[in-house]
Length: 92
Image 1 (tube, rainbow, N blue to C red):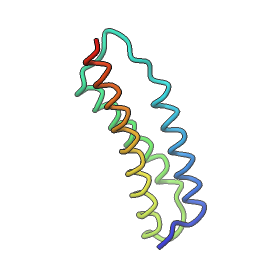
Image 2: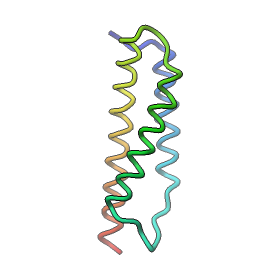
Image 3: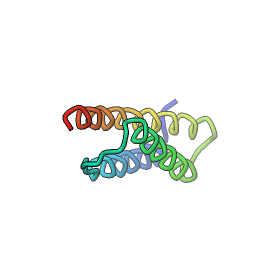
Image 4: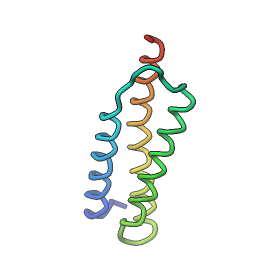
């Protein structure tokens, strides 16, 4: 089942906004621990999921599919961000 266009647009918007949030982060000393950063990023993902979940349209299965795709995209972006953060911690 394909995502309906409004959900695709919403997911795209959410991904762009999440990416902006990640790109705005400045790593500086004193750095927080890796575990703390993972918690922060997971909280951001949860916030975005909960915010956009309320705006999805269509049947429940369409919304679930859109939400699953959105979560996967956010997790991919998060993993990349956390890799950069780990590298920062190693270089500090």
